[in-house]
Length: 259
Image (cartoon, rainbow, N blue to C red; front, side, top):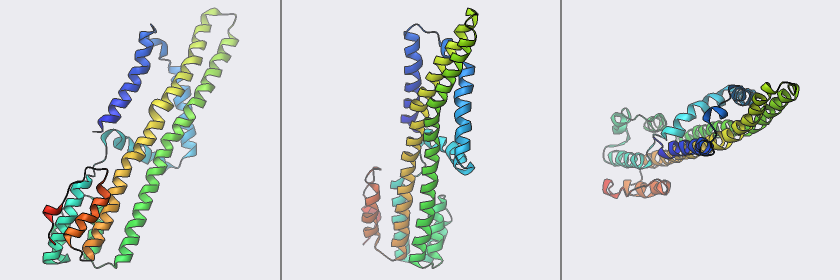
């Protein structure tokens, strides 16, 4: 669970609605179904028109990453790679097959399987880096979907405000209908600006930020796999992997390695 995302989202909503209540504004005054449909329905339509289906699907799936965090733990991955290097050094690469079968991460598992199959090191690097580059592009595009959503909602909110004012102008002779039109006008603007700045733009930034951990971890996997294949010492591999651990609380794996 990414506690900072949950707290940030809750704090942002509480600030807006709590501030309204402190001002004596009833919550019902800022709950306008018409404004909601105009702003969010219009923004969803625009982003669906702009983005490919695959990016939309990845953006929705990314909500899990935004609020639950990433499952990759760089320190544990580094420890696993060093332990595999130890076994390969003692028993040979083929001895890793039983260990590989128990690995859950598909990227690491695929790379290790190709390594034990005797794939040329340069071809193996090219393949894994291409796959990582494709994943990074998917993450960037998914983040852009949320950021695009954030760009559209304020504009559509203005459209909602104009529609509300048109309603007001058409009913100047009927005061009983003026309040609803004015409410839609102002609430649509609030929905557009608040949705963009408290939800969608932050969603895009957090998705890309959290996924950087996954990208960094996979880059570390590539180096670790190729280092094992090259027969480098577990001690040296441990030191090499620390380069990828600077922001993730990496620990010293020397106790797991032998020269």
